[in-house]
Image 1 (cartoon, rainbow, N blue to C red):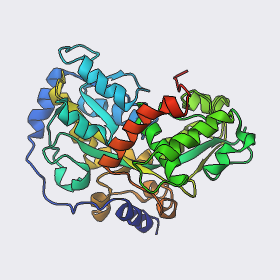
Image 2 (cartoon, rainbow, N blue to C red; image 1 turned 60 degrees about the horizontal axis):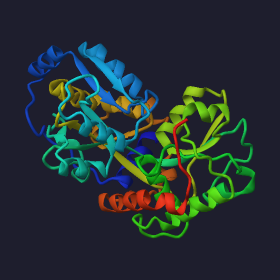
Image 3 (cartoon, helix red, strand yellow; image 1 turned 180 degrees about the vertical axis):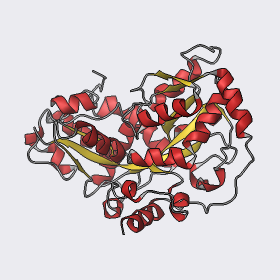
Image 4 (cartoon, one colour; image 1 turned 90 degrees about the vertical axis):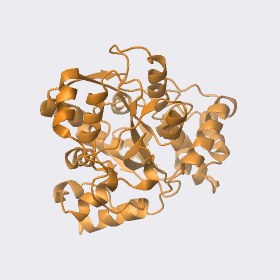
Length: 368
């Protein structure tokens, strides 16, 4: 029954393309050999506790013997894009080979000439709705935004966006990123906007006004919440993708106790994407990394980290998802009202947030 409910969830959230034969023939033996000659893969903005990237990174190195150079683990999507731009002529260790960014950055990267096209062997089972038809980018996993609460400090756990404005949460809430540059954070503003009267995800004024009010009453801490600040109580309430929040709960193992709550309104879901830099110093290692991520093995590791991998339905149809992994996912009812903002809506919203945050909210969100 657990497996059936999860399959229903995925059907609800995304209309997935039917699985088919491979879109292309990849000579894996030749690719592995070429990647191993390069010897290194440079990734950026992949915290080990974000959708189980720690196990993916160690698994890739163990399987292929290729060292992974990790840049700026807590970086934002915008910072990943800037890293490609800043290292166009650089083949050294500061030039990323691959990026994992918010959906809206896919078309932007193509328009700016920042991505290299490559269609993985499992291309046919990636939904058309979340991939570039020419292979410049493709969705990898998705989730929904949830409240993450340190219940050792917060005894009365907030259930709604309106709750977060209550006086009892003064100096208790922090965003998990800077809304001006972070996909996770600007999607949080979209969610707040929908919870406060907006009907179009592109209309974020309600969300900006909401955070202006939160800042005015003193509940908003101008600090980016991370696992350490959540655990220490410096930022005891935040909003993150459900897979991050659930992974944190596992990682902290009750010290402190964490509760993950899907709000009753303003539930926003989002897809992240993968792309290879057009200037990748290690292009073959980058292609092999994509093959690994989009194999059943890689997709299951994302699922183990609570992210819904983009090829979920294909794997479910073939009965390759272990019941123990599927059973740990939240119930489908938690996502019944989830809204997936489109590419155009995200682009419009992120632009409005970047331009209006300082003027309307007036809180400079910074890393510690």
